[in-house]
Image 1 (cartoon, rainbow over the protein chains, first blue to last red):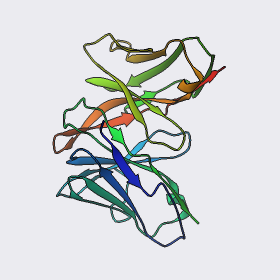
Image 2: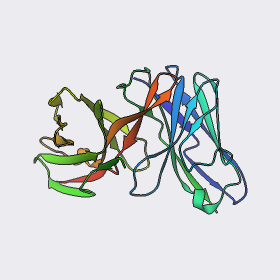
Image 3: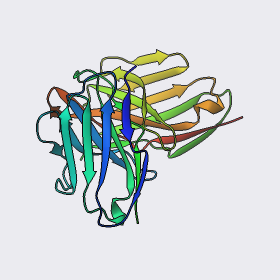
Length: 117
Length: 116
């Protein structure tokens, strides 16, 4: 089955530093990947849609200069949290579809737990 | 505004019983609805999809219904087992995201605990 690999699974960083999270589709090509953020007992909140070879589309309220997304190839998208602050501490999850069809399911990575101290 | 409600934050049931989880939505006209399972500290895993013209879908011990008049989906797990304990999320298709893809909007989930 389709596998999405996300690294690192956990990261602790100091306030003001930047953190890069990688999302790879291992056995399929993903022209589009989605980045979500999840707080405890809350739903997955879509942050941005990452399109290979073009700029990401950010959801309202998400700072594009703070959450930099790069989708350089059909199998890799990265999310960089720049100048991280404690309020950025959260669970970040990427996902992709094997097919572009509207009803094809999302395949998720196992998430990255970011803690900013 | 659009809203998805999974109206039980937590549900405890006895092993062997049928678990029924509810997903209600407002101000949506989804073409389909999906259910996912999420274990603690992990990403969600796709379980089932049901389209707007389908009333019911089954997969092994899982059954999903979709009532577009009531704007509701029910998710059933029959003969529940402790291994079924997890958070279950419903998701609706929403906006077109470009590049031939659509995004999903998720409910908050229902945490199911199956007690031995």
